[in-house]
Image (cartoon, rainbow, N blue to C red; front, top):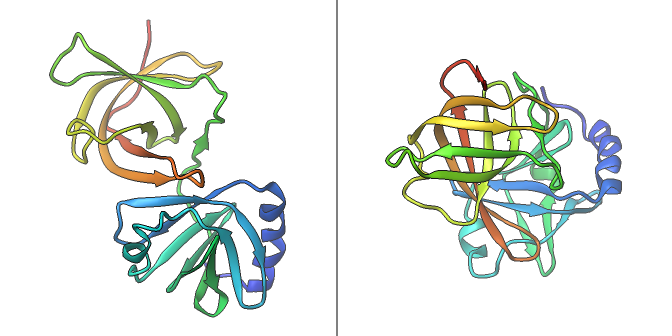
Length: 204
């Protein structure tokens, strides 16, 4: 459902105050960018520019850009980089209220949330990763590098999920996406999203 720019402007003030980076995603690119919202004018919504200069020409060729701002999603047909700023021109923007079928919980950096993934070809090897977010249908975690093991379609039969103040559980999962995320510090990491394949099995 599309909403008015006036309603969004009121909600956007809370996002500006929080100073929390949001994810900007160009359509058709296997990368996203963490960008801090700076201000909103009559002409544009402005974010800090976290797009490395060497890939900027590739990014701006996308025909659609999406950013999730709290309960809203903004979609722009164009993006302009001006030095340290990224600008979404308001005449290109559509503003949609989020309509997720399921809630997704994002773990704060200090939370002791992690995964123990049994290697699919070597049961004696356990891969440990930090849990980034989780929902009823899947989860995502972060990896410093993309490998052949972490690719869409890969199935992990035994993934132990360890969340604070909850019993551990084991799930079977399928990798559905791998996306490179660039931070404002110019550092980057890969986010791996997986879908649950069966009901949970409580740890004994």
